[in-house]
Length: 514
Ligand code: ME8
Image (tube, rainbow, N blue to C red; front, top):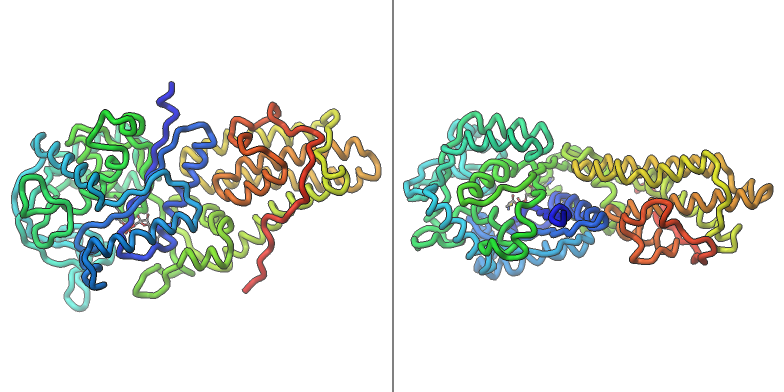
């Protein structure tokens, strides 16, 4: 079944008016880990990220910067490309919504919706929040003490009255509910799925999908006076990236429907309600799954530009190290929940999980191999029950990890890996190779061999999460680059006794408290 081995996943495309911060890094990181995992597991992966460059918000930021929107977006979209370099993201492509191919795709989906009778011309009179690029019903808003209307997200709304094209969203309630019913895994986590279902059950209103009061967007086909609503344009990036409107293109045929759209909980409604309706309306298949993850706060406070507490990925990577930050972000909170970034918890994770548990294990074992075994992989003799239990845990961990990754439970996958780290540390203490060195060198070699094999498995499993550290572990075991995918798990691919190893080097040094 060759087509079962494809995996297409996407990040949101980020608004270029903001500098990249920890929230953007987090979403793309979660996709990066999954993309790396799937590649190692034999999938043909397409991992797309990019920037959302149209709309009123970006136009306003360009004006404030004294630049044309095009010059402004050319410049600032680079910041998001650079983030991928900083964070070691392995995206296969980077899409910008100002590319000509994207205007073509957006106009094509518009025309398909028009032909299928889902778009009509009317006029919009209602509330709009530029910050969210979203329309709100009066009933959703609160009035602040200055008399301004405030959206549930906290964004200020303005009154908009203009001619507008509408998408007939009100007609989609039953079809969407039926779709959610038939595809119980479409929205995750479960609590978010319930939220979306009750929102749709509450009734849907037709959606304004064009604007006339400014010009920075994709022109509506056959009507120069309108540009497309930025969310219709933005969502379409997921199919532009695989060559829509050419639905016969190899990329489109191979990768659509997408396996996963990863998003923050703030933009779930767009992805789980509007997007499948647009796609079905245009005669296209909806994606397989949308996962809405939680929100990071900074030392307990909401992260916002106005509070001046944005966490800069460059600063934290510089201070703590890249793999350390990647590990912290994925380990600290059950994926899907909100999380708090606190320097104290970062240090605890680094010094506890990484330095004490994992780093010490690798360092201890490899130094003993260096000292006792002349720096060569020792030869094992007959295994005991303890040996079999450890090696079996090492080899079978992949099944639990795979299940967790397929559920986007990244923290659970790391839990499974750390159970193996703990088992290996327990085995070292219990078997005491330093004692065997004096009493029974054959047994000593067997124990160190089993530990090296366990560390090889740890190195393999850790690759998606902490790619540099995992590469260093596998390098230190002299595992060739083409021996690092998950088909190498288990005893059939075990290390060859006698292989000379290099002098061990530390992977996760402790960090002193600030
Ligand atoms: O919404 N914690 O772009 P955006 C966790 N262009 N994640 C966070 C976060 C935080 N504090 N802050 C931001 C847009 N994010 C649209 C998307 S997609 C077709 C168009 C992440 O730049 C999270 O993934 O405002 C959130 O959904 C996304 O950044 C919003 O990015």
